[in-house]
Image (tube, rainbow, N blue to C red; front, top):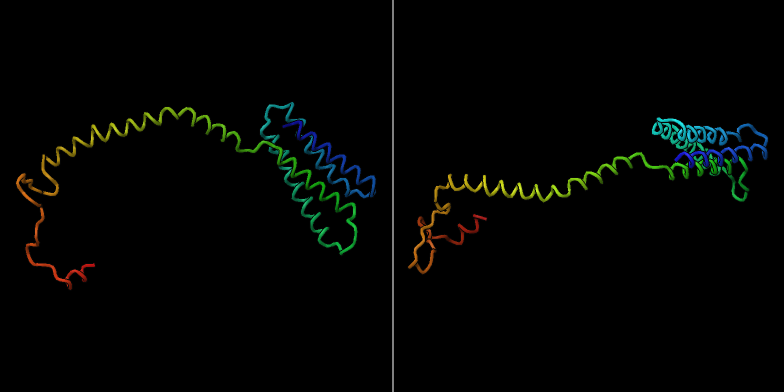
Length: 187
């Protein structure tokens, strides 16, 4: 990661110095300033122990450089008249924004540690899934079934009496016969 930061820092410094030599304006050194900061934090990443913090600081300068370079470059490009060639400061701003975005894209994402932890936990818990399934099915069989048998006490929940000699188990309405009118109001 530090080599990428140093590389993009050097590229931004070269961009700023190149455009400064071309235009002799001090504002052309803005990409060089961002390159110096990104490269400096990239070099410190390789030396220091609090790497994560330094990576985030370098990435923050990269994000600020991307937003600043692209916003100023696009607004300057938008104001150009048709047929006019793009001036060097506009090219410098757009190049700085593009380089900063590229440096951010090549960085390791901040959530990659959590992603690796979740993959590890999935690997650890994979054998446990079968155990949990077995445990839940055992609970249903050994706990729920005895309670059901105790509460039912051998009774049929539909209270049907089975008759081996019966032709059918149809039970007619006891109170009244249904009519077409009573059936249409029921729905």
